[in-house]
Amino acid sequence: MSVLLGPLFKVISTLAFAVMLVGVKLLSGRIPAGEVVFFRSAFALMPVVAMVAWQGELREGLKTDRPGGHLIRSVVGVTAMALWFSGVQRISLADSLAITYAAPLLTVALAAILLGETVRFHRWSAVAVGFLGVLVVLSPHLGELSHLLDGGAATGAAMCFVYAFFMAFAQIQVRSLTRTERTGAIVVYFSLGSALVALLTVPWWVMPDGRDFAILLMTGIFGGIGQIFLTLGYRHADASVIAPLEYTSMLWAVATGWWFFGEWPTSTVLLGSTVIIASGIAIVLRERALGLKRREE
Image (tube, rainbow, N blue to C red; front, top):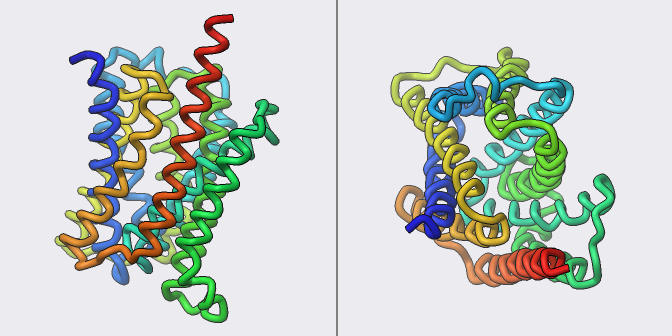
C-alpha cells in the first residue's frame, strides 16, 4: 500500500484543486479575481499550518534565509493565480486547463535558460510537439483576436496562456528554493505572502454575501488541501512517478464542468489535450530514464 500512497495523494490533490476551481467559477461576475486570490491564499493557511504543526516543523521548519526568494515566489504566484482565475471565469474548465498544461513545457525551456539545466533533443522535441497541442486548443480563439480585450472567451484563453508563463517561472523559483528551504516554509510563506500581496487589490473588492463567503471559504480550504496532498505525494514517491498523474486533473475538469456548468469539451480541445498530455508524459519518462542512467553510473 505504501507504494501506492504517493500516486494516491497526487490524485487527491488534483481533485481538491478541481473543487477549488469550481468555487472560482461559481464566483464569476460577482467577486473580483484579486479578492478571490486573497481568500484562497488566506483560508489555505489553515490546513497548511495544521500540516506543518502536525509534522512538528512549526518552529524549525519555518526558518528561512531567503525572504526575498519567498517574496518573488509570492508575487509571481499571485499574478499567476489572478490570471488563471480570471481566465476560468471566461472559458470552460476543460479549455482553461488544457491551455495551462503549457506550463510544464515552458518550465523545461526556462530551466535551460535560468538554471542552466541541460535539455537535449528528445525533450526539446517533446516541448515542440506539446506546443502544437496548445495551438490546437487555442485555435478556436485565434480567430477572435480582434475581441482580445473585450473580456470574453478570447480574453480568457489569453489569460490562461499568460498564466502558463508565470506558473512556469514560479516552478523554477520553487526549484531554486528547495535547494535551501524546507517544504513547510515554501508552502506556508507562499500562502501568507500571496494573501499579503493580494491585499493590494482591496480598492476593487466587493462585500460578499453569505453564499459567496462560503464559496470563498471552500475555495481556500480546498486549495490548501490540494497543496498538502501534493506535498505528501512527492514525499512518498519519485517525481517521475507523480508528475504524469497531474493530467488526471483533466478528468476532474470535464466531470465538474459538465456537472456544475453544463460544459462539455469540444473535439478540438480533446485532440489538443491528448497531444499536450502525451508530450508531457514523454518528457517525464525521458527524465526518469536519464535519472536511472545516472544512478547506474
